[in-house]
Structure formats: C-alpha cells, structure tokens
Amino acid sequence: MDVKIYIPHPALQEYVLNIATVNIVLPELMSDVVTPYPPTPFQSLIFYCNNPVSMGRIESGGFEKQPLSVLVGPQFSRVNIKVHHQLSAIRVDFLPGAMYRILGIPMHEMFDEAYDATDLFGSEMRSVNEQLQHTPNLEEGKNIVEKFLLNRLSNFKEKMPLDLALRMLFNNSGNMRIEKTASLSCLSLKQFERKCKERIGMNPKLYARILKFSKAYRLHEFCPEHTWTQIAYDVGYYDQMHMIKDFKTFAGVNPSVIEQQLLSTPIRMQKDLPN
Image (cartoon, rainbow, N blue to C red; front, side):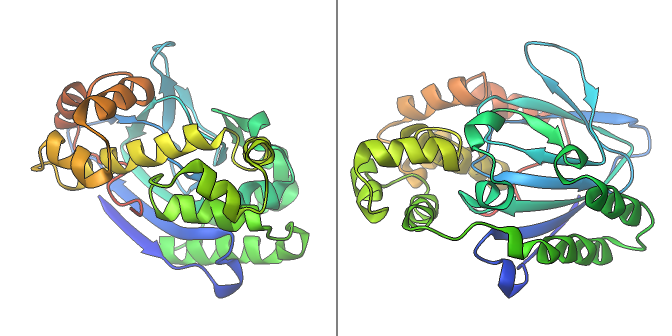
C-alpha cells in the first residue's frame, strides 16, 4: 500500500487540508479485500483512476460499486470498503466548512451520504474523470485534480470567523470546550450550533466526538502495538469507557472487535490520514 500526501497549492490551502494519492495492489491470490471504514471528520472528494471500490453498510450486508468520482459528505456511520485487485485513487480532504463554501449546499443535506460528483459538477467532472483514466501516473493525476479546483476558486464562498473556529476545534482533535469554540466564531452558542449544521452537517458536540474517535482509530491503525488504554489517554478521553462508547457508536463494535477485523485484512485505509 503506497500513500503519498501532498500539500495543496497555496491558493487552495484555506479550503483543502491535503491531497493524497493511494495505490494498493492486492496479493496475487486475492481478488478482493474488505476492510472497515468508520467515520472521519473529513469531507472529501475521491477520484478512482482505474477500478472503483465497492461500498457496503453493515445493516445492508451488500456492496455497491462506486462512481469514478465521489463526494463524501459529513460521516456518522461506519461502512465497509471492498477493494478489487488494484486501487489507484486520488483523495482531496477538505478543511471543516470548506465543502459548504465550495458547493453552497447546506451540509446537513449531505449527512452520512456519498454522491456521484458528476451530479454536482456536470461536464467539468466528466472531463476530469476521463483524463484520470488515461493519466500516466498518480502524481500527474493529482495535478489534474488540483487544476480543476483552482479553476473554480472564484465561485467559492468567503471565509467567516466560524470557519476559523472550526479549524481550531479540528486542530485540537475535539478537545476544546464548545462554548470557547463558539466565542471564537463571534456567534452566540445557539447561532454557532445552527451554523455548524449548515457548515459541517452536525452539531459541534457530535463533530468533536467524531474528531476524537477518529484520532483514536487512526492511532491504532498506525501504532497497533499501543494498548487501548494508552490510546484513550493520548487522544484525550476522560477514561477508556468513554472511548469504548464512541467506538460502539461510530464503528458499530468495541475496540477489541475492530482490532480483530483489522487483523483479517492487509489494508489500512485510514492510517495515513493526517492526525
């Protein structure tokens, strides 16, 4: 599994956290592999340059092949990802509030869903998809995606104090009092909560929980030798029971079950996401 993370063009850095290229080639005797993918705090734009993955929710039991380009809205539920033979992909992770500024769509309307990006960007996205199917390498594909975003900059909404406050909450992995975050946004607490649903698709307390949970999950993927007690402490949970509760909410199972599920797959889909 080869993941490269790029710092975006300076003009994109108030919207885009990073652009990553992902290349996965399964072992010769494996035709496909399923791996868990619990929610992350990132709203993302994902491009598949060869064979898209299939996505399935726990409750459905089935898998659905994804489009060539996918917009991932605010995540709450775990999904399972099935990789077929080889995966070559480019992922754009947006800063909190940036997808709203780019699309102008209230994020609560995209809550816990993913969408075919051509439905929102039309012919421009179809052109990008076609170019990516013929790109000689993923770095060149990253340049194509970056050019697409740069060409749309003039349509993006202006930054507000709310966006800076959400960035602070993000940078602190959810370990900030919501009242303090609201004061940084220059809004009352009720206004802040209402604007958060528009900007990030959920109330700030839920977002802070996902930030903390996601960091714990990614820390386990990156450092599986760490105990769950150590991870809970490092991430900022009050105690291990609070972390277990969040795992049951967002991953559908407790940490020890996730640990066993990850042992059954060679793929770590989140360990290279920024902490």
